[in-house]
Image (cartoon, helix red, strand yellow):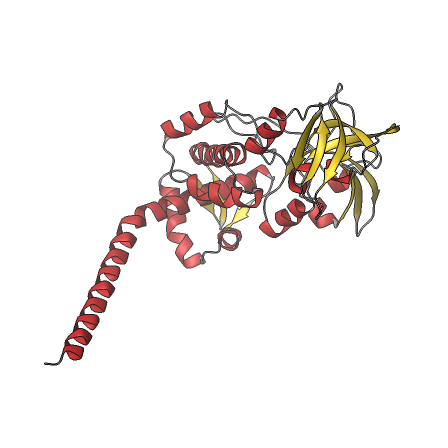
Length: 344
């Protein structure tokens, strides 16, 4: 038997073994993950019904099927099992949580929002990733891990989107937001909550650089467009997108930052005073800026620009600090009109 033929047999034999091994691994994975998949689906249903109830609406089997992208045929046995376990009522296709089902749903909501808070404060994941990653993790954490996570975060009351985080006892703080399209024209306010679903609308809001805690003032409102000022920029959104942004009044001792703009807009010859750090800057990046002395009231001016314009060296507290535009965009300043710098 020739050597090439033997090598060919070895190749096909190895390929067959690899294929069989993958099939075995795949079948074992599917077998052992089935309970986890059933648990995740059950919890997704509970959470969806909770959100529907909180909005003052009722849910039907068809509504749930569309929201979860699961056929009625596959969903019905799960609903029937949940009804037998006492977690929901199913009457004429109308679905409603029982007190036990609501308690279970609140645990999932609590885990989801705590994990989003963790992703925002402790990791480098982008805001557009938080919801999806929390959707996975919410089904994996044990009761003890949830308690540890809450303690690690300092028992927060709100997630990074502004949603209240239920307590371990199932209590949830009431909120008094108003949708942006309903906010009075000319009245200062701040973003209290941004809805992260549907994802396509949330990404549009993120692209506009709008974040929880940002101050704003509505300039005009029509049936086709909401125009408002926020952190030195004028934004124009359709009412459908703007409705996912909720606004609350400023605190009595919280001044409206009417003249605030971004550090990246500062030019040679201009001086400014740092107002604060935008709410979009979190975690390690925020701590770094604070460590560099980026504090309210600090004077700042442009000292040197690189040939390509990025990064820029700023003079802060008699120290030259180089910042890329990405970070300079997150520092809010108030330009000082009566002071000029001699920097060239």
